Image: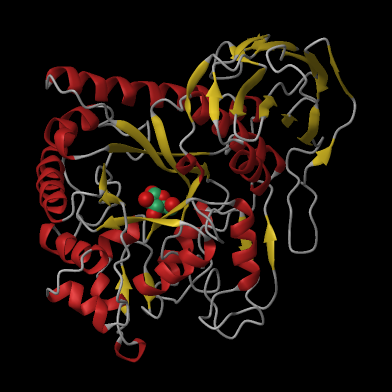
Length: 500
Ligand code: AHR
């Protein structure tokens, strides 16, 4: 396999919106309880937040975190989660058949996210609730009007508004599993009216209209067209969600799945532009891929757990343990997002702690990094700046259900401020190492700062509390001569080449 890449600082796709490195904390499993929050844990701070988890979150430099769900949001009674802890009542969460104590709520999350250095992407309940509750929540969070809900916040000791800028209008409303699931016509009207009212109350906010729960939904892409018909003028983004898995145990085909992702992004973009044309609108709608990851390892045992042992507090749910090959797919997904930096402005790795997450905790022990932590860390740290149109000529292969799959996928991000350019590349060939050449003549005088790689012969190897079998290594066996970078990329590898 081989690939040749040409990059130039003038070939720009767009400025990378840092919010593509967003993530997600849902009241689900052990994400909140025994995840980010565990009073009594040896590392807990004065608010009960686990310091070991906070450190790992901060290292990822996550700019925005979606909250409180997910499917949970369709059961979210936000008023129960604020005010004096002693008066908070437990609730049944129907999405995950879990007991929600409400010991941790909106105020605690606002405090935690500030400590983590992240903004909040807040979701309103448009499943079992509606416009009034969305408005009350917005007033509670963002206004300083000496009116009922802004005063309620103050009575809870929070004098300054939270000023949450980004709001999701419900979650996965196209999914029959959603409490209060709606048809496109029902959702479109409700979302448009909610959006109109919310923006009347606070015109500084940005709103996300619910798109399809995944590309396989029978209503995709008519859902997008029909709902945007109603919401287009009132919202700023449409959401996309998709999880990937390798239940078939076919690594080659698994790595080809970003072709499906590419098609998904392309179709949603085209649908937005179709509605724009139809409405003779001047506004361009952007994409928020606010749930994405690998998710399949735990699905079978989870449905059993929820059926057999419902209404527990913080059960072990969605605790996928990620392998080396999962990390490679995460890298491929991040490259695909950057290739679409012109329209894809936000994305949330779902999720952040314990629940399909890069960070895991032991209830009675420490926190540890899963394999997928690393590609996300590298992209978040070094993928800020301008995404460059990279001309890449790669050999190709076919996999079981995909054709013409490039062996090497790559993208470069130029950080003008720092005077650095980073090439992210995956050799997804399962058969051959790839000879990789990048023409970087335009970056005269640049030297290789670092070449990090995730490489492993065992696709199924995982990390755990006892040790990291998947972690990046520093490579020194490359050449940079006459403006051409050359290296051999191992088969199935994630590569980060930093020049500056
Ligand atoms: O992230 C886990 C779940 O996946 C979310 O709650 C839901 O929105 C999606 O189906």
